[in-house]
Length: 294
Image: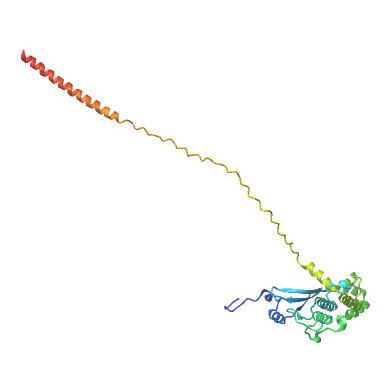
């Protein structure tokens, strides 16, 4: 866990134990191609890689499975196959134009008479200039496969069952482990013959073409069609319809004369009453006057 502001989490490959970045930094400062050596239980691989800003570029790559093209009938994970793979990678590098390199073994440590040291010895024997210490190289009897041939001959004398169990893969390939030194020499001659003929360089070019990812073909720009004249559509005269005015609703007010008529009738009635009352009074007065005269 982080306990201070100066703590930095290591790179993922460093945490997984796959890359030693301090060692890689020293290798990159040499400005030389790196000969990367890797091994597994059944195969070995040697690659010549150049460092660039965008990433590593593989210049040459050789595996122990490529040895079958040159007549190798032995196993692909033992010491002789490691030496031959380094030798083949060295010849590949010379065919491409690489004459020097520096060894890159990753997080592994080099020890005497191992497959890593055998690959280094094979690349140096091919003609590549690599800083090295000859004391770590395996002896000739070991990288030629003589020690395996002697062990197979001894095991065959002791019993056929043990011999068949130990070298069952050789039997499938119709090969004999006792003749490994002869297979070794024949493979070296086949590699040298291909390198001398000059066909190795063309072979590597074809291989790099096959290994490249297929890129989608670039589409040709379509030809510009002649600019078409704009079609002038006939103008359609649209007669603007006048908005239809809504008929005004005239509210007819009730004549106010009725009130006046009623008022006049009331006045007429009152005048009639007054006249009748006055007429009655006058007639009464006359009657009284007539009586008095009598």
